[in-house]
Length: 253
Image 1 (cartoon, one colour):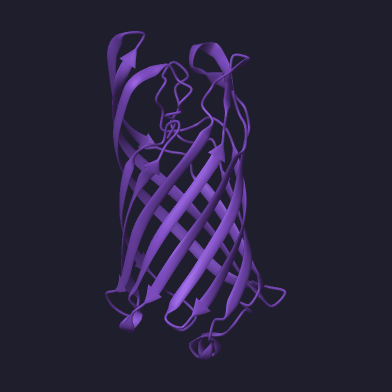
Image 2 (image 1 turned 45 degrees about the horizontal axis):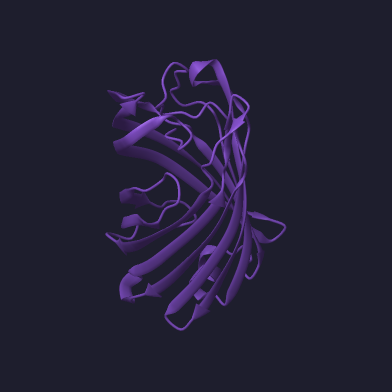
């Protein structure tokens, strides 16, 4: 969803209800654990604000940009059968993830607020995970690269510098497959250039959140999450809440 701080909207507010269909498949590459997945979001959005002193609002529903993900472990997580996985004890894992977001969501160049972004996003990420008793400590660093949107509002071109991010997770494993995580993310960069004019909208933002997941049955589980902005220099100051139902199958489960 495009609500970039470069757009000339004052007092902007938005409320979005997002439903997602996601699929992930684990497999083996050179005896390493790998995973492929995709996410397809559907959004109901209501946004409002002042454009050149006049109050404007928009209500729109439709598909947002879908994403494809590929990840592979570089150390500490060999590909295992289900029986081997039951006996596996994690120590330290390092891995690589590549996320590609395609410009296939609903987009109207005559609107400032859209569900799609009309540009490709490529985001490589490196991560590490370490078990300490019942705790798991995780960290990751990523860079998001963006192609130009040559059909931006007003017939202009939108360019954006890469966004650099780091995140950390402190996870506690309870009994019976229940776990909880405290999350923190920092990201910076992302200065935009519209119609050849560079904007003063560099990101320098902190967000934090909480996640709780628990099994419902052997194959079904529920995940609840919430996150909020802690410190925001430009844009992206919002609260988000997530309810996810997960179903697992295959490999003799």
